[in-house]
Length: 150
Image (cartoon, rainbow, N blue to C red; front, side):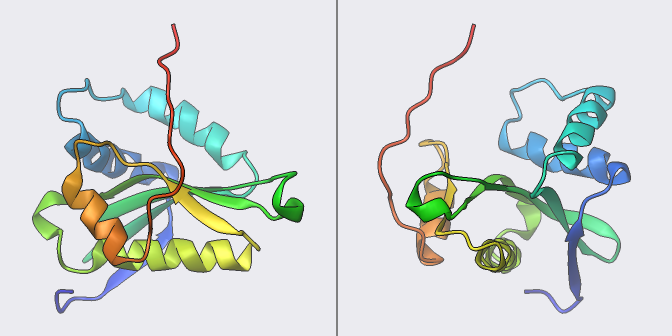
């Protein structure tokens, strides 16, 4: 990782423009989400127990983000699962250990919450991301299915 220190903290509403800009890097063809809609969604997320958006900053600039929800579970003897979504590091800073820092952070949060696993999905079109997750110890697990809703 580069010489200047990074900080990792829970996102606040004022972080949303930077978070949206990072997320847009993953899907540049998708129209950007209007900030007002993001604020509404973020408020609901803040009201969801054990769900948080996290940001990584260097020199007061947001350079990474991820979301984790500790999902309650009636299986696995009641042990929850950590569900990770929207993992992004600024394109120009990938390969510097920032993503690994975020995933270690998520693993620590999940362990503290008693999770039996951390799960995430990654689009088949992102083989670099798949190599990254495998290097961190993630493994293919089951089969993921999705269907678009009307």
